[in-house]
Length: 200
Image 1 (cartoon, one colour):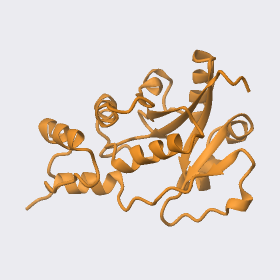
Image 2 (cartoon, rainbow, N blue to C red):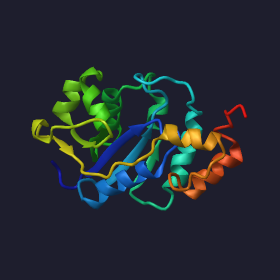
Image 3 (cartoon, helix red, strand yellow):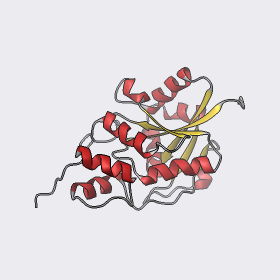
Image 4 (cartoon, rainbow, N blue to C red):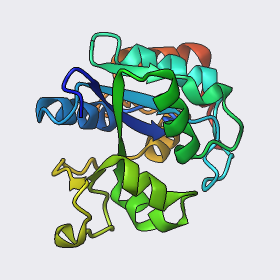
């Protein structure tokens, strides 16, 4: 490994919307010194997820940029917006490697995705060529001793909320500032991104 290469960790997701758990997780990787930058890779459409309730990708990117605007080493990326869809991580990593030869890429995924990992396209090649960081998710136990040598478990706190919880709370008009930054909350309200779905 060339020591001058910038270690860059890809954290892919719908970020629908981005929340403090995402940001704190990225920050933890930086604090532990295992990477130089974390790129939040906003996915246009995850092949393993349903589309419903997914707001426009440019809007999700905009919210992610707002959430991290004060953090130099976390970036929100629209790189996958210009790739064929659905976007497969293997393809994304290869294209990133071509475009940014001065960077060495790794991948951050949740324990839920690690369990699904054998279903990912070209998962063996990903494992052979990239380092992975896996963070805990509620209900998904990981046997740390069984992980391949290039897969590292990140002992991060479990966040007691998900983007789904936030969308539900927003649609009821509840205050979400425990879960999302105030700028993101204000922007969601201003643009009415997650309209009130309740029938009352």
